[in-house]
Image (tube, rainbow, N blue to C red; front, side):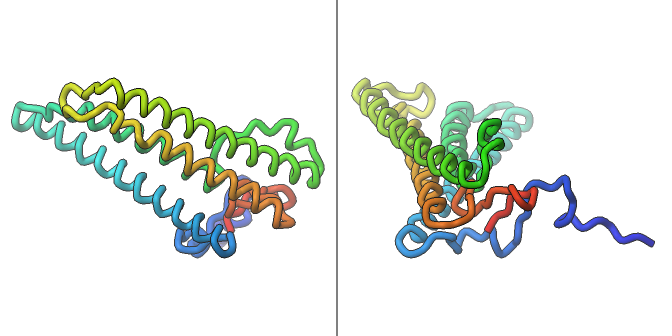
Length: 208
């Protein structure tokens, strides 16, 4: 009888995950940067969990109200729209933390390790600057929206309240990429994020 293949040695696997390595109460960065990293991770977790759970509860309640009681929740669509914004912009930071953003890596893949190291620092640094820039401009957009005094038709709350997640998400993502750039500067290995090693040499990406 042959034993089943070990996923850890399966050539088709691109990421290995250790239960002890994915806990958000441990940071791969030292000192104050580790504290910032953990704080960002917890904010991401709370926002994503709250957003997904509230959206599920709101959708189920709306369906039950419509088909069981004959009356849907009048603000359900607006609430889901707000939660989609929340999940989207919390999600971009979460994806950056786990190295899950889509990468156009044709040139990067052709470089030697030292070249990839420099390129990764450059990519993370430039992306962090872009994220902080978008956070600044989105904050300006929110200030303009607040000055217009527009309200949501059903919930009757200011429209700008629904957009506060946009600069927050961009800021958290910018912090993630800035920490990734720093991690690549101080470490010998190449990191896709603060806790995800590049897969070259072992043909797999590994969370640490």
